[in-house]
Amino acid sequence: MIPLWILVVVAIFAIIIAGVVLLSIYENKQLSVESYEICSEKIPQGFDGYRIVFLTDLHCREFGDKNEKLLEAIAQCKPDVVLIGGDMVVSRENSTEEVPLRLLKDLAKEYPVYYADGNHELRLARNEEIFGVRYKDYIHKMKEYDVQHMSNETIVLAADDGFISLTAFDLEKKFYHRFHVPQMTKEEIETAIGEHAGKVFQILLVHNPNYMEAYADFGSDLVLSGHFHGGMVRIPGLGGVISPQFQIFPKYDAGEFRKKNTTMIVSRGLGNHSIKLRVFNRPEISVITLKKQRSGHGD
Image (cartoon, rainbow, N blue to C red; front, side, top):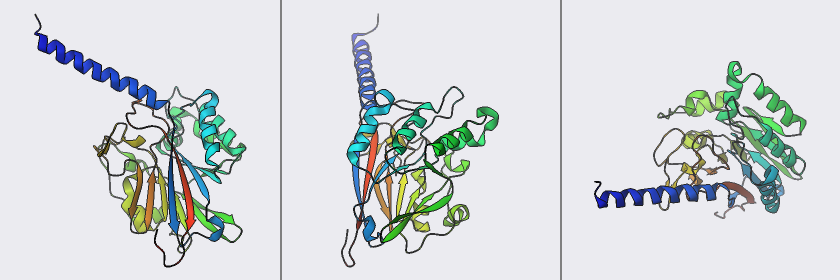
């Protein structure tokens, strides 16, 4: 006969697991708008108050019918531009790009939309023997919707009295390996996307936040990343528990980080793919407002 204390322990453990599962199901359906303000003397007057909505890691997730809840939440943010940081798709043979394409089409009707790839898009691109021409079709479709896809390139966003630069940086496959985080150098970034824009305020879209030190050495003013899904389970006071590369309590899990003159914002993302777990970790819409900093004043 099983001792009573063992049965009690098993029952408590089962209740805890059930609670975590129910909380995760609930949290996966919620949306959280996280607001950030970036101040810099390099921001032109024409971009003072410029509002960016940053989306990442949708992984074909839907919030309401045809993502109507997500679209409504974005509309309430009143963005001047929508920037997308990748992994809106799922790189599986049985998956399709229908959900992200419909979202992109709806977004592009209302806002300028710029799209940079994550590891899932790049996996589609690099493995045509598995996925066929799904990546090419995806890019072609988004361009039809007037979404500007960016790959290792820089464009200029212009206002009446100035401009800022927007750069997309595609990481090589080695920078996404599990259990190992290789070093990245400024020179590797420059080889891919050229030198930093100098006195021009630069936004860098790069999916993986692990390489903050290299992004700061490169000289980006604002880095927008995702990839970590907030660490899946977030423990108050400690942060996210695990990254997709199986780092325990990753340093750059979610939120705002600063190094040198670089600020990096890491979104918790909107969806998930393999392990659909979110605890104290609601899906995130990031809203970043640029502010012109007057000379001689701090943040």
